[in-house]
Length: 460
Image 1 (cartoon, rainbow, N blue to C red):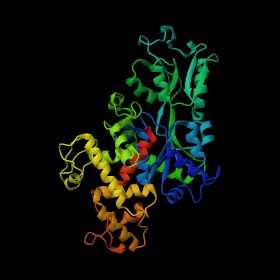
Image 2: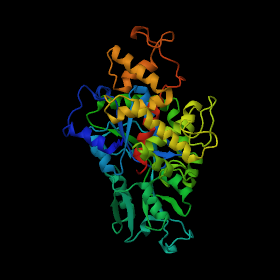
Image 3: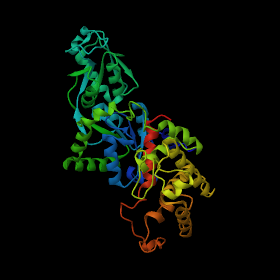
Image 4: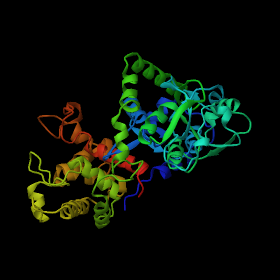
């Protein structure tokens, strides 16, 4: 079974890095040598989520653009707590802590902040008066001084401590602040569900959540506006310099503001809460999750990898026929479909089972020398798209010219994506890139990257 668990891989990175170790040759070169830019993120409605099979979010979009700017692949680690995220940053497992963090004097002792992304305040979240919940009308407050011997639940977060202290200075010493290792969004939902009476939440996030949960009130601001930013390690000066240069450049051309509006001020985001395929509410990818889980056992693939392949092929649309007459959820061409008894009358289960059986057949054609399960997955996905014969031929060409025939990325893949138009197996000094719309460009990477997001955000 192919199991690629992001958290375990992240801890494995940490084993090779001693505490507080200086990053050699600068953070940018360190990332290039590693082959990845690793960012830690908190799953939430605005920054990192899956909607109808694809990963979205404000911070995710910015990270992807920055990754493209650096020409270094992006790897995202989803962290459930701020302490876990900071641990990864502090020990150089992660390069960027892509959390929305308030820029404060205390925070600067913990990490270096990027240029600000936006400004917002902290608001008190409470049940709205007449909202129909169990909260008593007398518990609704319009002045912080009315909080007497009440408990306010907050996220356990060292970066927010100065804001919490400012809130307490306004509310008085009789208020009990209960810090818990859950997200601001989870606490907001607890207020909406009448599980708790009060919590604190960043104002821009609260504004969106309030539309999804109208039985809450967020009218009481408890702090001034603070600039919010990402964080990098104190030893990552080169990364901070180029990150700030890039952020300042997209701020000047208004791309930063446009990206912010597309998520934080987009009314359609609220509709995600009503969808059955919003990762933060339903934990579902598609209407076919249960069948994918069932039939993936025939091949011992993680069902989420199979789901990512299906999304690429058909966007989960059943009975789809392409311009090349590929049919169904798994988009099998007529010649292959016939082998597995698939036609336009086949039901959903048959479409999925046929695709899985074909993947299993492809895997059996691959040589046993390809031992790494991740590499076998890459070769299998490539062959699913262009045919096993072409993939095996490319292996021979890679071996002939000194590349590793048992590794896809940067080796066998090289002779597919970079080759001469006149001679598909030309010498390296005559290679030219295919146009970006070439059918294979990004196919394997796209499926695997989406799969990593599924691993981060969806339960097994």
